Length: 409
Image (cartoon, rainbow, N blue to C red):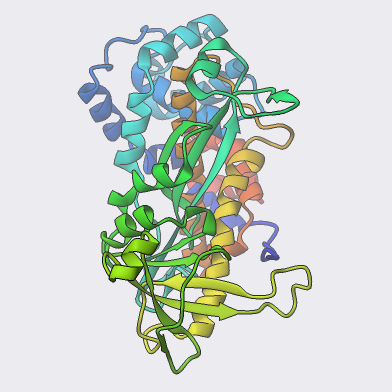
């Protein structure tokens, strides 16, 4: 599906007010310290890299992926010293070995718990593109991240393979639940490359609830997953595989029809354990290389609540989730092959959650700006926002908003 074009930039006034203290507003220092205390990590880090500062450093690694680790440390020191005071920020730039040891002592559970504590839906009813009728739009999708080829990473995550041999890098598999209107990743599960995306998605079902409409690709179709997700009270909209059998049981006025999803042919014969679905079949006349007939299933059974033509159009909003992973893997990285930095599985997991928090911070800025300018967040440039944040965050800690306008114009 073609993507919507984006504007080249946010307005200078919007960014000038939003870059001030961005990281500490979206990831509050009080929350960081509370998580550190609960994880008993507040005082276990070298005093040359205080624990709260180190947490923001891991997030900054995600925001400044093109830079070397020590350059990221210099960049963060510049901004945090003015905001926190010299006593809370390292006076010197630590070496690579010291940084790695401090990160190892910090562990990855702190960043995971901080992500859970800080990340929440960004959209409000004023957010354009975030709702369809009475439903809040979310979607599942998955991807993999290449990680350095070390024994620790290979043992933890494994490599994909073919008859030509294994892949060059171990692969971390990741499945996320995204808020489609804002591109915020509300929940993430990760594992080895062999881990099935459906099982990872099922582990996130606690983040679904009534009032949401969850859109899934056909790779997530499966009776156990569908049953688990539907039990949350959220409604589902999923593309169906062509080899799945859904006979028409009742034709509806809008052209869709009711059918029943059974876990096996034996259950179909007995009429047991069936899940009632509404099936919508349609064509895309302007996509000559596409499939002749597309088919989606939904738990919304009443056409008056959601007409077939609207749901057929809505399904293709799922492509926005692919844009989310593109933002993580391409735009934050800065292009080129995406290989995370960390040499051990523990630090890979830590780096992943730092990257996710950095992405959430950028998307939080973009959502606030979109509300100010009354536009769909999709129409704002993610790449431009990242560039401005990289350029202005150190200065933003020390300057009032009125002085920032010239920096971002």
